[in-house]
Length: 151
Image 1 (cartoon, rainbow, N blue to C red):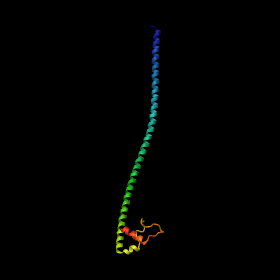
Image 2 (image 1 turned 180 degrees about the vertical axis):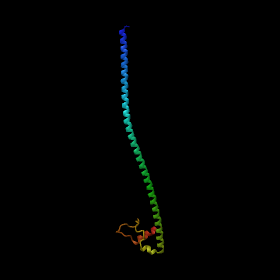
Image 3 (image 1 turned 90 degrees about the horizontal axis):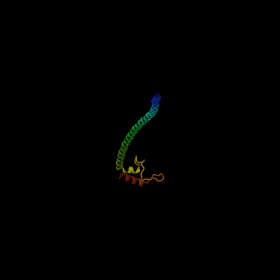
């Protein structure tokens, strides 16, 4: 082999090494650029994710507050229902006492219940008595109604 061939072989090997080195450098440069692009995208997505997490936390807090408010309103409703029930029971007991007193008064003076309307009963609407002002109840209808209520 002569010197000329040996130089061409060395130049070819050097060219291959230089081309390989340049290719490797370009590839690494592209990989670094891709990695930086991905890191930038990850940063944006992380920021977006953190915003969504904040919205989720805020929504969850509002839901808990609404639930607590609903429970408080339910408790208030239950308390009011209990109070109404207590008032109704007191009214019923008082009404029963008044009816007992009315019956006792009627037993003591039966004529008084016929001539006078019973206090506390004037506002009640009775199914067997007319409700229109053009047709007043007769004495017989009132007596029948009072007897019906006593039984």
